[in-house]
Amino acid sequence: MANDILISGRNLRRHYRRGSETVKALDGVDVDVRAGESVCVLGPSGSGKTTLVNLLSALDAPTAGELTIGGRRVDGLSERELVGVRRGLLGYVFQQFHLIPTLTVAENVALPLLFLGRKAEPAEIARVLAAVGLADRAGHLPKELSGGQMQRVAIGRALAVRPRVLIADEPTGNLDSHTGEAIFDLFQKTVREDGVALVLTTHNLALAARCDRTLTLADGRIVA
Image 1 (spheres, rainbow, N blue to C red):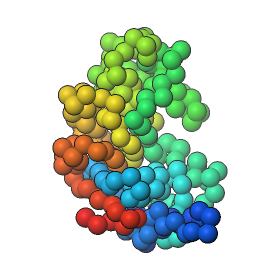
Image 2 (tube, rainbow, N blue to C red):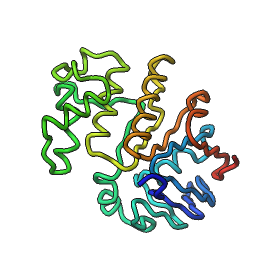
Image 3 (cartoon, one colour):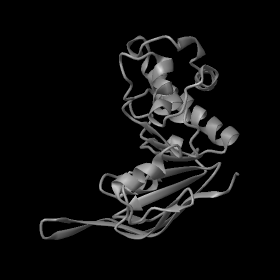
């Protein structure tokens, strides 16, 4: 349901040792992410932005604080347990497309379902391809696509598992501004129509301004 809290963090910290120094990559952050909203995480290199997104996407666990994803406490979990949290709940879109060059568009989109042990129903794959505007490209290989089309395949691959949270890390960084706008429109459509929560990182302030909320980090803390 819209407005359900899908991710909740309290006093999140991620500290690690570098020689004799303790690096406070994240130092006491509170955050909630709700279904049907888009949240942009901003901050310069070294601000803690990547660390926070890695925690919110269950790619890492905090060293202190409480973090709940999809109703499950994840602080203190092992990497193997984090994999269980991610499965089917979270979808990922990265700046690099990471498509398998020898697989068709439809096969790339279906791939995460195979990893989850779920059948890739042709009708469902067709639905996803239509949603990302690639219904006429199902049989094409990645090398036959433009950069924007490849990013749409990557988004379709993330959406195929019907995630409740979509994590997009600099998803328009390799695209021209017009294509980036179109990709962001697709994200907003997914949030609005499917009630998915979107957590986005970007250096594009115009796109950030179109999100429901922005979190700006500096020195491991939220400053705005």
